[in-house]
Image 1 (cartoon, one colour):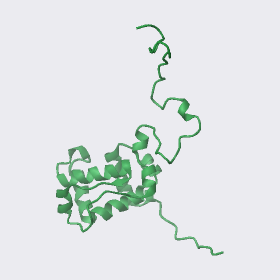
Image 2 (tube, one colour):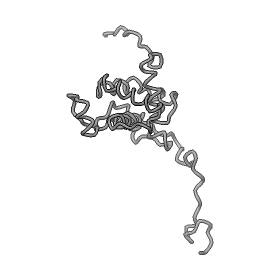
Image 3 (tube, one colour):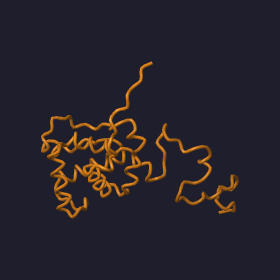
Image 4 (tube, helix red, strand yellow):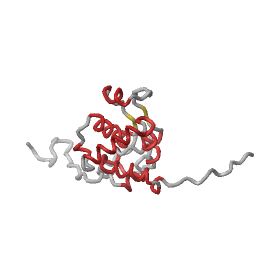
Length: 173
């Protein structure tokens, strides 16, 4: 039986300044805090995906645009910066790198296909979209036995209806 020697120890994503800057930016774009973003386990993958799709030069321009906007992505004036912000947000919520607008893809001058793709199999299950409504991705991360018996967090108890009257209180209308 062959055994594999352990690989080099990986530096946690949170300890590298480049990853921390990416998380700080992602907090502004997604509305989720750093803890939630780290909890997905996707920081390194998404950081690397962004660099791979855009290139360091474009990412640098984007970061400068965000800084010029006072750190507020809603104040981005440049079409390229807005589309990059949209793409990064899309990646966090759905685990999919989206197709960039034609104008932005052309401006970037990248030799990559401008096509949407899922960043990894785990990206689907770790998408922030599920956390926005306390949902669970179909076929993965089941909610647990009997959880269907209680309303989701934040939802009120459903009104009971009488099978004979069709009204919630059982009376006549």
